[in-house]
Image (cartoon, rainbow, N blue to C red; front, side):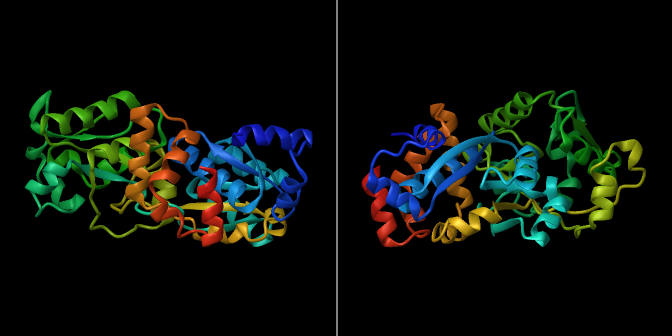
Amino acid sequence: MTIRKIGALCVTGLIASTGAAMAADSCGQISLAEMDWASAELMANVDAIILEEGYGCEVELVPGATTTTFASMNEKGQPDVAPELWINAVRDPLKVAKDAGTLVALNAGPITDLGEGWWVTPAFAKAHPELDTVEKILEHPELFPYKEDETKGAFYGCPAGWGCQLVNANLFRAFKMEDKGWVLVDPGSAAGLDGAMANAVERGEPWFGYYWSPTAIIGKYNMVMLPFEAEWGGRDNWDGCIALSEQDCADPKPTSWTVSEVETVVTAEFMEKAGPAQEYFKKRVFPGDVMNAMLVFMSDNQATGEDAAYEFLAEHADVWTQWVSPEIADKVKSAL
């Protein structure tokens, strides 16, 4: 029986047996946001299987996205859990909700080694170990020749219309990259950005540009994210300039990329009814390399979040069994 079928039974109030009802009493009916990107789909389905099979919860997966899920949790108390909430987009109202006690962050880091930034290919990083920061790379545009003018270096930003397009354009100005001999390349689309990176790696050519992790393409090609030497310039510079359009950011200052923060956020009602399942969420951390490998699996096999969750549970017991007691682990394993 799949998680979604069980969710439907929850809605109609049907429970298959007295034993199932007694198990559910220890946890209750739990709704999980299944966000509309691959890592979040995987995480929600892993959570659903473990909560259901290990803790006796009745689980319903609810479609979601960052801002809409947060708004629903904040205003209606549903769904109960946002497994992978990227909080930069909702930081201020989330803080208000936390202070009021209506929402709780049970896990402040459910995935390691995640974030946005500027990347190079692993071959380039190996060939030039001395160029190990953004600022060092910026002094060498000749190493990344722009196909339309090889006297200049190519830096790949985000497609038009993405929020990161503004950030990259303003950082390009803040670091005076044009003066250093760089061209800010608009890849045109998500496919264009992915294709530029993939082609460079497969042809053994250098590539320098923006991306984020966890993603399948970062995992597939083992891309290397470069640290900034510049210190974090503060929220006034970032939120009040770097993240805005060029006309609203007259004087961008150099800064490291803002820290990408992801939390597992739950409602106050969940805290009251979930019992020991709370401890699971506190311990549930996906290593970044494992998450990226699972995203590659999803991409290569056109796998759903549910498919990938069963694959993860079968192949990475060394990871997830650390999140639960041996008794819970045995219950989950017997259900696979």
